[in-house]
Length: 335
Ligand SMILES: [Fe+2]
Image (cartoon, rainbow, N blue to C red; front, side, top):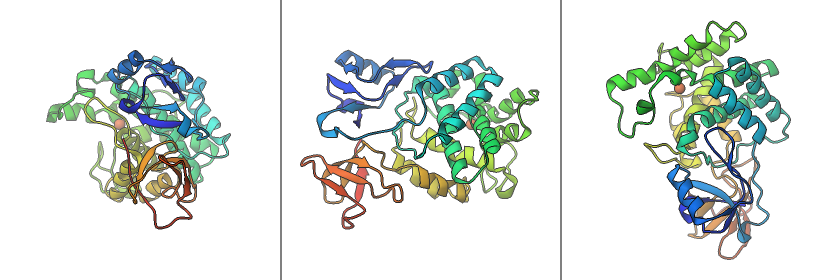
């Protein structure tokens, strides 16, 4: 299978990874033959790309980290604002990830803007737990981190969609309303005695910056809890690689570059280093341009060195392991 921007997907291609709707249910199942009408509709809904099967990508495997069941049940729990159920789902996410031998984050975000909010919370939870595992957090800490990540934007439920999905720049007043969501989220959780104070604090602090320029309390450096630091960087990463009404999705390599450039300003450097250890800038199945001008598809990661995966030249089907051919580099992702 491979990833293609939706405009490049040809009619009658076969879908390889399901497309989910707003409720987390499957909109189009794997193996669906993509009719022109489906492709048009998906594009209108804001999907920028799809994973498809075709001859050239035969044998390339892309793994989803979360089961469809967990994804769907978590969306349902978030939609119903059932906090106890959300906590259980946050713990299921930890269990599913701990069961995996390899938790590398190796996929292009294919969510559309219509189902952004819930899918975003799940993605931030998955990514935060991966970073937490990498940092050596214990089981109890990972469960708290996963809960906080799932709840991080819960305060946005009271913000109007006109502001949340505004295409243009927000006014000062709208920006202030947006910035209230971390305190709003904290207030929604604070009376629930089953939720740890650390989780509530992380929700309150997930927009604090390392240099003290964040909100709501302008905390900096050591005054920000590690859960909030992890969620902050994972939140921004997933937001950047998501397609929004007001902005096209950034590719993973550029989004990781953005995180690196904001170490010590917005982000904790250890959190960013962990993301770089687990998130591939050139996900498997994506098309890239090599430094010799040839187009290639990423066929397999070198988990010790994500910048140099194994690739296949599209025109000749020749496979090249970039760990062995050092005079060749990936120039850019083709989208
Ligand atoms: Fe937020």
